[in-house]
Length: 492
Ligand SMILES: Cc1cc2nc3c(=O)[nH]c(=O)nc-3n(C[C@H](O)[C@H](O)[C@H](O)COP(=O)(O)OP(=O)(O)OC[C@H]3O[C@@H](n4cnc5c(N)ncnc54)[C@H](O)[C@@H]3O)c2cc1C
Image 1 (cartoon, rainbow, N blue to C red):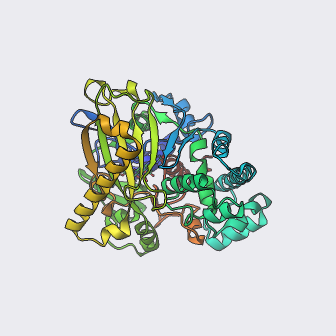
Image 2 (image 1 turned 45 degrees about the vertical axis):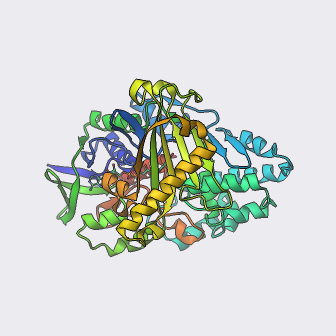
């Protein structure tokens, strides 16, 4: 049999693509190496403990937004909660609770002694309007392939609703802050460095302003905790694909892709399948490997991903009686705000809810992550890499002990992970996560309109537009699938 589309990988990019194609009646086969879906946004069990593997806090669940639409349409058994606050940012100088409402955040920042309230209000008003313009650009039907950076700029300059964006293209988020006279307001500087690092994967000084301003909406766009873990949503999406007639093959790695007349031959661990089109939910390094090691058209994207990040992780099991806030919650910990928000100096900790029974005796678990600069990591030999990661994980432990002693005191079980773990488990050669950082410059706008890598071969996932996050990869997967099926793309 010839499939309409073979999808390599059941991360959120592959899940979004598979569901969209299955909804449109296409004959799809989805192959995933692991025995469970979700990739970097999955839930795994080890030794009786259940942890989020990477991603922990998710947007897109408000009425009409992508995940909410899928949950409604397919009656998915997925329960979500809105922690209040969503995240607590803790530094040596202050604690900032961040709720799901922009006006509350502005009020909390405005309550710091000496806060420039009017300038803060003006900055967040501009953020809201520029973010709105950029999100609408993603939905603009005028942006159809082929589309290059020059055409994008011409398009932006001709369309009045995008005019507010134009002055900020090629400039950093820090420049927008300075233009509002807020460069010396430390709580905002720290908040923005923290949120930029986890969204656009760059500090405020490096981040391309329109993208950073758009992704500052991360906390305000239907952001929720998935009860029981993000794996519940990933499994539910997989079941929806199956119930629409899609074929799902777990524990079935794809080993190679070869063009054949009318499509592609997909070689897997158990045999091979033929499909008219292929959607690869892998990073460019992995796709190059699947194509036999030669893919010059992926060289530029590969270099951009290699300018990015890996992750060091701590997975902690807590004692059953730990005295903590009972709902699932998130702590963003900064040890020294003057140092880069990486390598254990900045740690994002997500604590499961008391009613989720993630460990022995109903215990709770914590997933903690920090950024690892891959250029520095890969410059080391294998033994030095191991020592470096041990140092980063130890710095993470110190930051947790200083800023969240309630977690350190309750820890009874500990697992670790490194870029090597991500390479091994989710098929990301080298362990690159987070996609290409959206650093200042026009290159950040390349690839805004999906185009095939080769005829009938498409990429989805966090290396390509709209970039990293569970919502972004699911949306990107759904858009590529719509193009593959010849339909109009779904809205965010
Ligand atoms: C530590 C960390 C924390 C994060 N926190 C958040 C967060 O809180 N909120 C948020 O929204 N986002 C977060 N993210 C980002 C988010 O997790 C990712 O952007 C997103 O999950 C990536 O999805 P993907 O589809 O691109 O790839 P992946 O999740 O990597 O999925 C790819 C899938 O393909 C499979 N695969 C690979 N090669 C093959 C092959 N040859 N054959 C078959 N299958 C294959 C893999 O096993 C995997 O399941 C975080 C990421 C990390 C690393």
